[in-house]
Structures are given as structure tokens and as C-alpha cells.
Amino acid sequence: MKFSRRYILVLLGVCISGFFLWRAFEGLDFAAIWVHIQQANPIWLLVGAVVYFAAVATISLRWQYLLRSMTNASLRQIIPLVSIGYMGNNVYPFRSGEILRIALLRRNHGIPFARATTTVVVERVFDGLVMLTFILVPLLFIDISSPVVRRVALVAAPLFLTALAVFLLLAARPNLLRRLVALVADRLPGKLGDVLRHLGEEVIGGLECLRSPSDLAGAVVASYLSWAIEASVYWIVSFAFDLNLSYAVMLLTVGVVNLAGLIPATPGQIGVYEFFVRTVLIAAGIDETRATAYALVVHAVIWLPVTLVGLYFLARQGLNLGSITHARQLEGEAV
Image 1: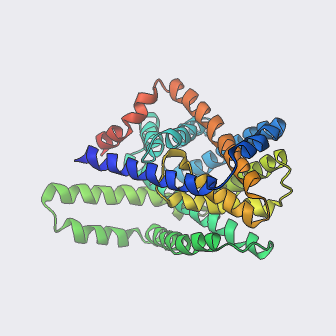
Image 2 (image 1 turned 180 degrees about the vertical axis):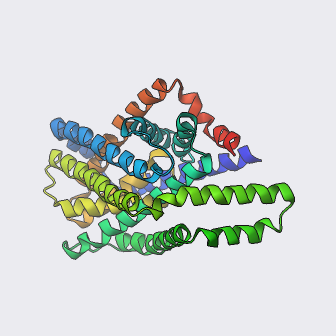
């Protein structure tokens, strides 16, 4: 049954990606798109790929802040795990890369699975808030009218703002979470109740970073800085196509495409990514063919290098691609 359910979810993701790919390429001349790709300046693409690793390092710094109450792991130790996580998410469904980096953190540094998972969920909430900022602030300075952009913001805003409020409340008042857990645990059979209470304590431990002003500030600053660097990658790649777009448009593009990542699709958000990148660029005045060529290339720039590096670090950990296949088994063993 479990296999069947996952198979259905994978098939659903493929269908969604196929739909958005069709929307992205509908009515376009593939030969013209290929001409634009061939004419792209490879030097700018190479520079963009190199700069992208600065974003990965800064994301790793954020995780270090969130883990500081649990481990003194160095940035040199965390960067490989984050790279492996990116690689896993890029090539396998169900965000298996997140599970793999959490499992490796547990193996290498003894961080309980639930605590590490809590920090990863906090990361996603921070990412959502940064993306909302990247949508709302640029719209104050650039004239882009797109119902798709507004729709993405309207759907995502309440989700992430509510999640942040809940996390901050539970971090500030851990006894509130304990009472909520106790209400449920007292109604469960003995062993299940004990498991739930233990899980509640692990989540409280994972939220410890939000109770430290310095760690919280560091995580927030690193969140904005890392995504600002990634927007710089988009901007750098735009030079390869002579798009003549402002950095504000690139911030908006990053915000929209990453919030659109909430849509279930294939690993790497194939199709969904291209559709939303070209949607923003077309709204900014770029013609459809060039916008689509740019979307394909910038996707490759942020997908391929980190995937290859992640594979390298995975091998350094003594693992292979089969370890990603069994990432869910690692999760089950931890639980």
C-alpha cells in the first residue's frame, strides 16, 4: 500500500511537471529557443555557477546557527551535508535529500532525528518569508502586472506567516507545547503516549535556536543574504542573454519561482520552474522565446553544479546513490 501511494504521488508529480512544461513551451519555436541558448555568453554562465556556491555556503551558515544549541559542527562539516541535500532533492522525489542530510547529521554528530528535522522545517519557514519579501518589495519599485505573481503571494503569505507565528510562540513558551502534547498523549496507549511525549521534547530542543537572539538573528540574516546571492546568480546569467533587466526583477523571479516550489512536481521542479521564471520575465517585457531560453539555462546553472558536488560529497561520506533510495528507511530506523 505504501509503495502504491508513493507511486501515485510520483506519477502525479510527473503529470504536473508535464502540464507546466506544455504551458511553458506551448506555441513556441524550439529552433529559435535553441539559437538563443547557443548565443548565450558561456563566461557569464560559468561566473553564475561559481557564485551559486557562495549561496550554498551561506545557507550552510544558517543551518549552523540553527544547530548551534545542539552541536559545534564547523561550517566545513555542514557544507557537504547541505550540498548532499540539494543533490538528493534534485534527483529523487519526496525531498529525499532533506532526509539524507538529516540522517547524516545524526550519524556524524549525534543529533536526534526529530531535533534536526525541526531545524529543517524552520529553514523552510524562513525561506518562505524571504520569498514573500522578494515579491512584495520589488513590486514597489518596478511596474509588473501579473495575476500569476499576485496569486502566488496570496496563497503563500498566510501559510508562512502563520507557521512563523506558531514556531515563535512554541519557542517562547515550550510548556505550552508540553501541555498540548500531554492532552493527546494521555489519551493514547502507554507506549504510544511515551513516544509522543519524547517527540514533543525533541521538537522543543529543535526550537532552542529561536530562543537565542544571536542565533535567531544570524539565521535570519543568513537567510536573506543567501537568497540575495542566488538572485545575483539569476542576474549574472541574464547578462549572458543581454536581457537588460534590473536586480529587482531577479529578486521577484527568485521569490515567485521558489514559492511555486510548493506545487508538487518532479525532482528539480522541472516544468514548474521554467513556467514561472518565463512568466515573470515576460511580464517584465522579455519576449517569450528568449525568456524560455533563459529559464532553461538558469535552471541548469543552479541545478547541475551543486548536484555534481553533492554526489562528490556523498562519495566522501562512503555512500552512493543507493543511499538516497533508502533515505526513507534511514528515517524509519531513526524513528
